[in-house]
Image (tube, rainbow over all chains, first blue to last red; front, top):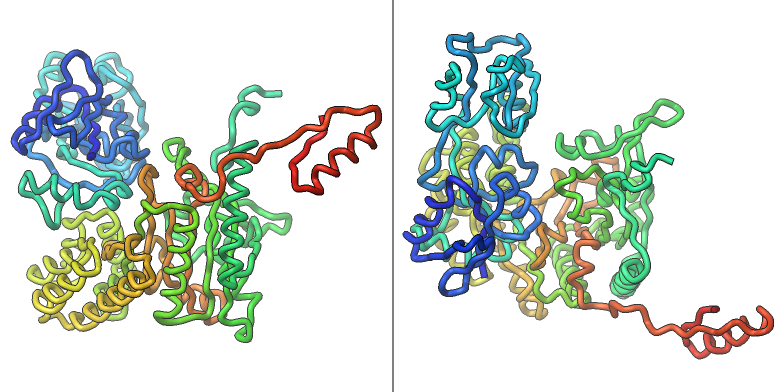
Length: 206
Length: 379
């Protein structure tokens, strides 16, 4: 039986539709956190998005679906089996409307929920960055004067606009992936290849 | 006393007691008897050694995990983070050519930093066997059959050994054939190794193109490293891919031969009755930078990462000044203890001698029982 960890939240509906396209359906209604497909050959766990890599890393679920944003922050090693055709967003640098985009080595301060990504990104471009880790409502940081910049996922930009902020730079595209625990993949590679075959993705996969 | 330090265990350490410790020791005794029957002698490696001896063999990721300290003379030391590495240096400086081939086994704790996320990985204890001074397929087969025997005796029938080859990777990314600078060559090889390990075929294509392969050549090479299957499937694949799709490549012959030698390993294991344990997996290219020939990892259902890593390391000992081609494996014992159905998992029944009028009398009563192999404790 293949086991999947799926993220609660915005992606779940798209994920459900994607599975249906492959002829697999499951139902998490009634606040259930564990579900099976109708043939009971697949088991699905519903977990918090940011915890998903932890469950895969420890082999609690063998497969999972999550975005690059979550994977960048995780220290686990995963096989990315597929990039899925939905859920793509942008990781952006935002600040007060008209603020200067940081350049050169000048140290900046940025508030973010994504410290690993932020540090790596700015160090790669040769900019020193002081990171203040927040767990939500990151837009408040420049509004209240905590930092000049924020690094966050931007979908519509409406919250930014309402707070007199704007996207200063799109830093990276975030895609959604089907990932696997490497040991689980090795032990179950035939079943996983058969599963990918339902979506026309057997053989050398990415 | 600081309560925080009293209740916290430093990362990369563990302690275990009672049944768990008993079972751990039982498995070790079991392995001791297997290794001894195969002519492997125990060896002990130091807990720490000079960092300088190993620094050029360590990857950036390894260095970030090892514990280093400075001795009283100001020399930088490192704690034992990889038993094979420490054993290789001891063997290179302690063995002579008359001792070869040397068969050694070890059971040592390893000390390296683990992130909080990895703390349940149980990478604290390595047991391994090394065949030093044996080149060629006989040595490979001895180690593969020894590992199969160990899995058999530990009743790990569900384990799967994925067998590949570092030589296959080295043939495709032949260092001396590169026209680039030394650092570019090294960077592409590191990127390609990561790509194969993570089965990231997009990244592997990029590495192959950067190495100088054409667009048409990268597809069959990605297909090559993505292969997992049984011996028959490998034979068919070898005919199809190495023999047809890659035949224009100058390295096609060498690739075909290397796959052929994996086929030989697998068919020998089948004849010995170990076939079910094995799969050909050409993405297994060695977990360590010092691997050279065959490379393998073993996986067990219910365990979140490989439990055994091994392979040939023909040049490792010459790094320490002693030329002795070698092959071996290392097992993360704590990972498999809960999965093994091998030796008895329960502490045998014990009897208790109640306190009598004198300690001497109590002791003697207990001794009588012990003479009859009855486990006996004093009340």
